[in-house]
Image (cartoon, rainbow, N blue to C red; front, side, top):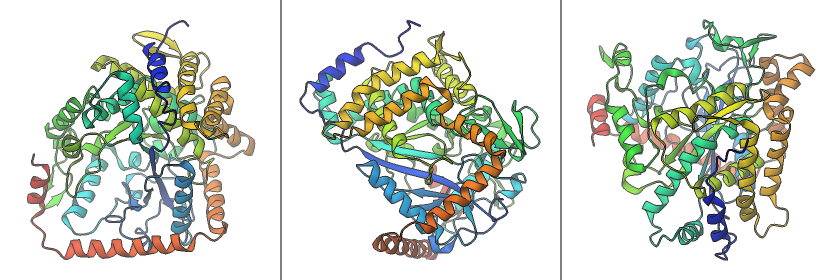
Length: 528
């Protein structure tokens, strides 16, 4: 099709940036990962044991915590300027964790293991302090609102911020004299809008959850999946059921419309959602006979309840709400949340994915990004869900400005446009790793059979395994990989052990301090 989905001004702007003489302007951006994994018992079910004490306190540990469930470990890396350092740290974290799992495994896919309904998924515990109680009550509310089964889904989040020199070069190319925080926030919101336009490609290229255990949809007959056999349901052309209407893109938040046209509108809309009562959630109650069931009965309890493909972020001060942090100091980085945990990678992610996302972030930030009205946002969101459910379907058409858009034509436009950002990131490196990562993705567009989702289904067919059997086998393989891997850096393991002990002591201090009544604590937290 002749339709052009990338603003023609993009190439002119890129030329201006390249002509600045700072060809390495994108080198040195800060990269971090948050990777979730269910702890699973030897019989392949969600662990009912508490978070291992040797891993520290999930409340106060910076790098080893829990997400929704007590059994859902979340590993959080610091930021690095190179992907290999990030991957090395994440590998060491896995080695450390496996030292303290005894006979348990880390589940190696986004979609969970065999489940026995909501009751089989223990909610994370964070101790007796008010901040710990708040985290637990928030999760109780999520379970009531969406069900615990959905909360057992895991993912990989890629956090990214541009290097300092990028802002000066971009500002000069745009003729902007003030490249301070307002300009940065404005650019990051342009990135968010373009991620909505083009981010479906992340599901296509990296989605690796085309199948689920039958227990995941137990009691629901409207799932629209087909029987694969061996206790498995699947969608034949799915890329990421995690990011489909079966997972985080379900209809529970359909009434929400959160603008990404500016920082002000984004904060405004989230604040409205956090303060607007929901009749559906009011029926659960909030505090009933001293038992806190949710933080409040509003459309969202807190900002993080909004399930977005990508979020603008600012490191918050102690006790500071995310919206307040953004309003105080603007956008510091973005959190890209679309990556599945990959059973094809020991740590669930690899350098090619991270390099692609870094180059994709640059493309999304530099390409002109017109504001989106609510109708356009819904259209683009539907593209994400369509690709998640049907991305490898032959001849699949998406929608752009109300017109059909061939998926493969659009994907090739995106990859062609990214060649320039990859070359900037490769500057001075003869191995050209970013261009190489892009070439790998081009192969997937040319041949859907080499996408991770297709590879996973093909392996299941070749081995005669169902989804559960394959994931269980791979989880055991990776446990052996990490326990047999060469002895990790002794200083790094000592560092992790010291952090774990320090986090336990920090939680103890929090709990020993005087605590105001929990209701008063919440009122203070939500007060503007």
